[in-house]
Image 1 (cartoon, one colour):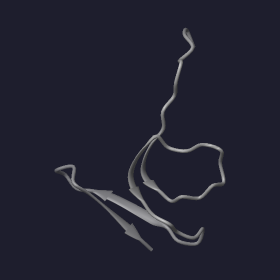
Image 2 (cartoon, helix red, strand yellow):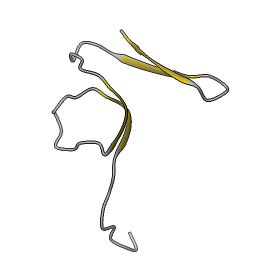
Image 3 (cartoon, one colour):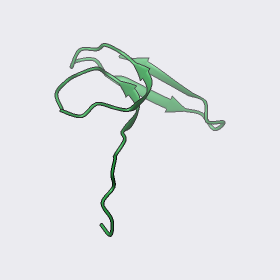
Image 4 (cartoon, rainbow, N blue to C red):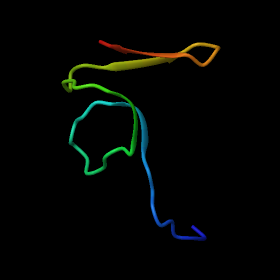
Length: 55
């Protein structure tokens, strides 16, 4: 890199609130408490509207 950033911010669509990694998002679209066996499916339509499904 040609320069050193002073701050890096993380953005996530769905925060599952698992603490496996020492990184926490700065901006969260949706926050869910899930198990590791559950899956989140995020879909967007042609207009840009989105939905998140828990399976």
